[in-house]
Image (tube, rainbow over all chains, first blue to last red):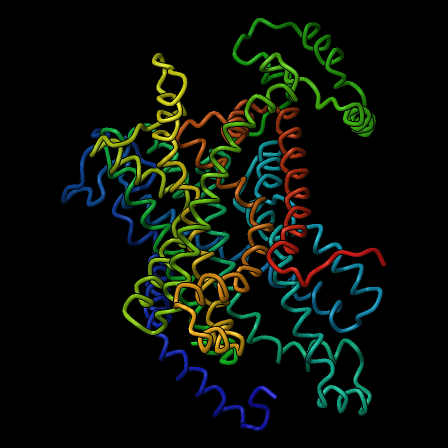
Length: 286
Length: 297
């Protein structure tokens, strides 16, 4: 039904045209593109080694250090550039894990219905009420953290809302005529689920990748802020943890890393909203 | 964060003069020589007796440690909840009623900013501006130390300390509720019974707040119930920043001190609270929407 009769190319065109109308979404996309560029080029862009100790601790922003230096004399701009990279890697990595997991759990639940649906959805409900941040905190403080562990942990604790979304889509799509047609020509369950239903459920899934990434960036920053992030990489949350002690005399230590997190999250949320409006016009109530 | 080799090394810390024999005796005392599944069964048995274990680092039972921290967290979370529902609800209604106007536009932007703002950074910025620059509010704690007062002035002191943490913790939810209420108000305002209400000659206020808002609240109740668990997360961060003497601050302390018994206890308490809150949410539905009834099958 979702523009089912239109040729594929035209459909693509309309999504992009609709996206362009969402001014916030376009702005968000530009910012995300810029930040991704900075993150990719971090080694070339950062003026200093982010971990190299300098002789001028807590010096205010100047031409040498546009964002000032921290309590160990490290250049904040360089640390922000590298920290941005870590934030994005953790964010995107864990969002992808959550989405794939959501698809593999929500998909079969909606497609097969019945007992399997019941089982999977009760498990989803149970996970949904779990205080996931506490769980991650507990696991990380017992076993220690690395960037990969954080990606895995944040990824595997945040799939429930996505699974529910995917299930609802599969539940409605499986009743459509084109699925009946596919079944009539003898397509197997796997084929129907992943070749026929999934592509049609993607409009609902895609915006959540962006929103989930935003959520994961905040989670990673929060963990680092509490001092349980990966100690071997520069991260924005960790910078804020130190800033808490030196804020009184050096406002810049708290301002720039936090502002960076805020901009990443804001841009990703805008992109998510824009994608949602463009891909699911029926959800739009304005 | 470096992984502690064992709890024991952490307990002794830097006091290096500990013989292997002493170490072993302590391990036995704490029951750490047994295999982990036995330890787990023992832990469960303890739990059923209402004993959450003993915090060796704080030299106090875990339950006592948690219980003495609960009031502060309840105060903070209730304040943040009330703040977010009242202000967020108001914003949502205003922006739905004035849909597609300048006001709606700015409310939408403000709520987007609100829910993109990392809790802890908001806290830091508030301290920077309102405590350190302007000096309006204290930076930390729940009461002014050394000048404890009682009665009304004591309450005033607590409220004064409560302002910044409440805003820090509540802003994210405020933004979410504003968005939710806006969307569901728009839907409700288009329904026929609203037209009926208008045609009866009711005032705009009565229509918006009595007729529309009440029905628009339902999705908010659902989300609010689910959010309680996540609000604890915010409480950990907020209490850490403002040195608020609640469970969140205790969690941070437990993480720093590798106090696993305490962490497990906190995790358990939070989980129980979340489940209870979900139950409460279900019951609140019947208050908001009398059509929903829970009857035995």
